[in-house]
Image 1: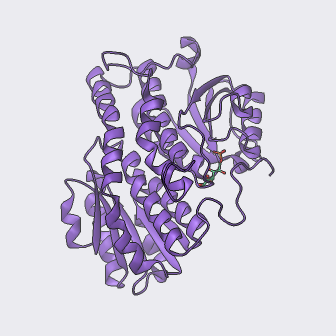
Image 2: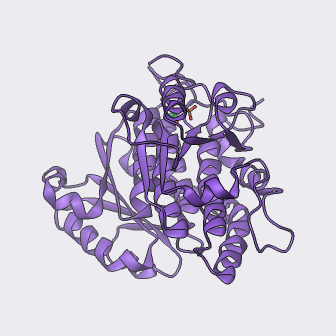
Length: 366
Ligand code: F6R
């Protein structure tokens, strides 16, 4: 049932190109000019009145929400808040009938996420659920459902569901941009063209995935690891850090690279592994200067960088490259090395990859 793989997690990582294709399927106009989300039935008039988007979720799904915040604000020019469901539900959030709430949940059964959804509906918001399980509680209680078609996810650590959640954020960002007229047609077409190429690019990363193993061998006995990045890379850093923690039990932290010198730099000492995400051309110089800061403290830096930013090899100890894509879409590619890193670390530490201690696949209690 693991299809020849040692663990469900590795199988599911390899299913990502297929999961992305299935989630894209039928959601793009045949001429590639628009996103078509037939399952979302928000009346035009209501769409025009939306003045705020609130995204809520837990764990990995929340990390997809952080990307959603960035993407929707950039594409549709609406203010977006992303908040953890267990926080949002207890703070009497500013949500009303002009708020669009997006709830993200692989299982569709997470107690806090479901409670946040119900609270949002009580306050009159329109709620879109992004979920992987047909007819789950979240799907049933939302106004509209955008299914991720990742297929059943067995490993506790979410991989293919997360990548399809990311894709859903891009689809929703484009959908809202279209309805609000915030993007030119040619920009939409360009992003869609690049979106469609992502499954093959993920497949190409997976084919070259083995060069991570060296870094893993060197660092699998470490106690602490750090993930740094800026902008979208920071959101992916958070996901990389969570993956590593939950399955390899290495203490990991993600930091917005510019925050390092406000405290965390005190923890950066000789040989501490630092994973630096460098996919954003516009933030390249800034992140490189942060890499130099940690190198000056003799940390070991593994950079995950976009093709085209090869100069980073001069400052990092090792570089894993991801293929070029639209600068906003890099998250879908950059997360793959994060997943493989966590996986191989866990395997070399002999951890129970698919069933990490203390964790359950679906958290239906608070
Ligand atoms: C981490 C992980 C969890 C879930 C979280 C929410 O790999 O899987 O952090 O993302 O428990 O679960 P869902 O998406 O089912 O609401």
